[in-house]
Image (cartoon, rainbow, N blue to C red):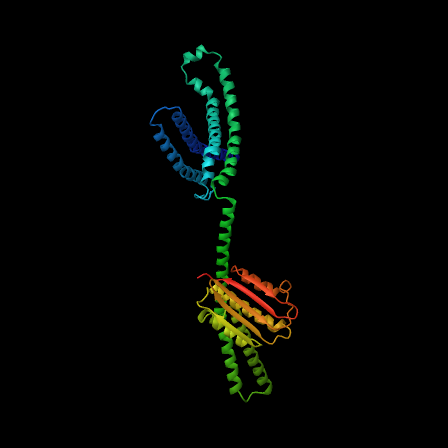
Amino acid sequence: MKIPPRLRRALTRLTRDTAFLALGAPLHLLMGFLLLMIFGLGWEIIGGGDSSAPVVLGFALVLTACSVPVLTAAQRRRFRHLLGIDIPHPGWRRPWRQFGYHCLAGALFGGLEVLVVGLLVAGVAASLTSAWVYALPWQWRMEHLGYTTQAAYVSVVGLAVLAAVPALAGALVRLECHMVPALLGRSRQEDLARRVEDLTESRAGAVDAADAERRRIERDLHDGAQQRLVSLALNLGLAKATLVDLPPEAREVIDTAHREAKEAIEELSALVRGLHPAVLDELGLDAALSGLAARAPLPVRLRVDLPRRPAPAVEAVAYFVVSEALTNVAKYAREATRADVTVTLVGEILRVMIADDGLGGADPSKGSGLTGLAQRVRSVDGTFRMSSPVGGPTVMNVELPCPS
């Protein structure tokens, strides 16, 4: 006979809930038994009873203290294997909360679990009353002629109890799922701290992955498209130098193509440097910033003091901050004649300062470029500050964590 899916799911759920409650009852009641034993021994000592009671009381106290982490671990395994709920390990930062759970809430849950499991057993036994009666000797049935009516009543009561048990078991399981993880697991503050650590690690991984992807794109462009353009420019240059008997229109076409190829090479080189300059990986931040200062359209006074080399991700952020800042100075700083860039490593903080002598008035809240700089700095837990009063000067201060 095929069991309907809905009934099969209900039976599976009842089996799971019953097993969960049946395993929880002894775990919850064990602490209650130990506490009763401790109270009994204490009362016996107060009443002047057996002289060995203090020794037994000390043993019971040690056993109770040692049983708390064992019972907590058992409860975590019960939730994980039967319900699929993983309760984080609470550790010993707040042992009194675990002790209070096993002594107070555990005893209450243990009593309710015994009640529900007992109702299930009693319901099954009562619903099968007619079978139990027919297992008795026939002489007993002859002496109790009204047993069929009584057995029918008991069977109906048993079936009613069985009908109520799934709802009771499910409610008790939901109550434990709501309370036990909060009492035996980590606190909300600990969960938030762990979440912050996980987010920090995942963000660091995302930053590293993005930096690695930029390196790959830079390498592919440098070794692929840029080399092809260089080869094309060389061939056009050779054609312009060797094919001297071409018509003027053809030479003009070759000249134009040669000039555009060289311009494309320059633009692609700038794009590659903007993605991730190779000199940053090979020679470090000092050499990369020196190249930026040399290519800047206005004089740049650069000072770099790095006792050690920062992490690659921090180097990349510092480089792009200086690059974008110098670009903004060249484009938007009115009447700026020079820029100062200072990069120093003090302890575990890499400090980057970019200043210009323009008229100021820059507003970070209105510039998408400055907003992008601030976001890039925050991606490595750095701080971004900018001062640009009307009349100048404009000073940008960036601090990047750089642990050794």
